[in-house]
Image 1 (cartoon, rainbow, N blue to C red):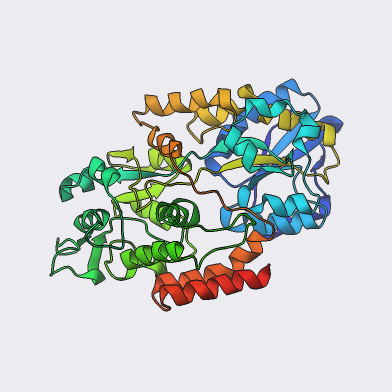
Image 2: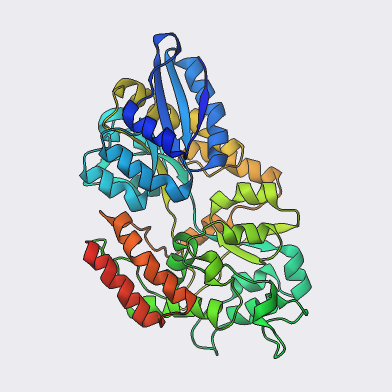
Length: 438
């Protein structure tokens, strides 16, 4: 059997998918060819080895990987699947799963693989993708919580330690805020002045301290949760105007627009990779992110770096710990072959390839050892991503129609971070836009 990888993203290719139906059709020698869509290039590389093993054990089934960039992923997936087409198996995150469940486009994993299959998978991820008692995806990745990636050289030059950052607490009360002074020390302009200096020039910053931005998983949710706020209520409705949530936004916006210890919103709005790239280039001292950033930073950093726990807020250290699943397309023309692929992806043997290269933390429990072992060999302690989840957590985003809500409210959040609209007023506009969709 032959393994093939699709270079996705072009409109012609996506149109071809829609015309072809779910699967890619007949494989070589009359077999079946399935397509598997995901957005992570590093995990795709790990999947290549896993799929090769699967194909060797399942004669007559070929699998093609369809790697679609994150910024296009859900727009194209939604249009493909709603047309009765799309890939046979595709990655889903928690923010979008309910839409596909309610439209009847996902295979029930309990029915497909048996109710006992979930016993081998991360319980938090299983819970996240269980809707009305049924599981709609095979766990592939567990992000753990967020942590701080630190440039050890920049911290040493500024006289700041990783422990000080982990022990810090942010607050709108200057008397209680121990995080901002550290971030000011780490922000350096072209003349060598830090952001606490009267001579500091915010127009010529060469090194920013922190990636404050509209990034949801690792910035907004963490700060909202650590202030005792919420992003959604129990029914999935947005709560952007809740007072504690407004305070968290105010603090983050002030880091960008008042204190200039984070890159300007003109650079970060709708550009999720910008701050990671700045960190890799040595222009950002501290990068708050998840386990999925380990592989690109491990490959791309030319300086000494480490991982440490996130700081606390008034309500303590709070993070979110989402996962990613491989979902089966209910429109597939090859349900038996899809079931075989899902069973493999949910096995310790099939998922171990993800962990063995350090690409991501597997959502299959017995495969996690390979991940931790890889990073131990690289001299990286991954425990800060997981110890932080032992305390309070804020739920990952979810709910029907969330993608459409997000498209409606994000432009208003962008304006808030640009400083064009006061925080409270802008959040009310964002809330109204989201409510108008639902």
